[in-house]
Amino acid sequence: MFNAEDILKFKRYCQEICFKPLPLSAQACQRQGTYLWCLDWEMIELLKCLFNGESAYLGDPPPRRLRNNPLWSKDTIISKVNTLIAEYKTAEKIIEYLREVRNGGAQGKPGNL
Image (tube, rainbow, N blue to C red; front, top):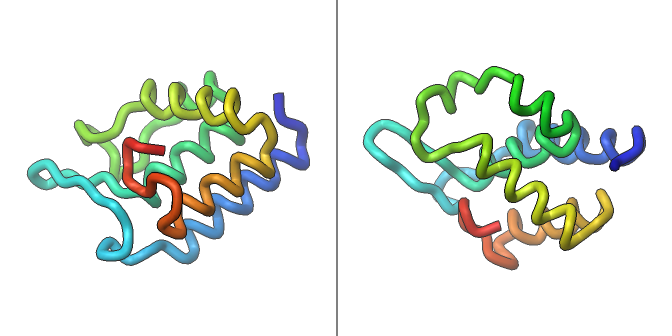
C-alpha cells in the first residue's frame, strides 16, 4: 500500500512525537485506575501500524506502558488505521491530519481520531 518513502515519513513523524511529547496537561487523556491512555500514545500506535503493516503490528509485543492496559486495543488501532487510509489515502494527508489533531484541531481526543 505505502512505498518506502511513505514508510519513512510515518517513521519520522513517529520519532517527532516520541522526542517531543506533549505535556499530559496539553493533550486529551483518559485514566482508569493506574492505567493511562493519551493522544500521543494513540498517534504512536497508529503510526507503528502504518509503517509496520497490520500483521507485523499484531505480532509486535506491546510496550511496557500498554501491557494489560484496558484503554488500548490493537484491534481498535487497526480499525482506525483502515479508516485513515480510506479517508486520506496518502501518507502526506494522513500525517497532515494527525498533525492537525495533535495541534488541537480536528477532534484531538484519544478515541476520536
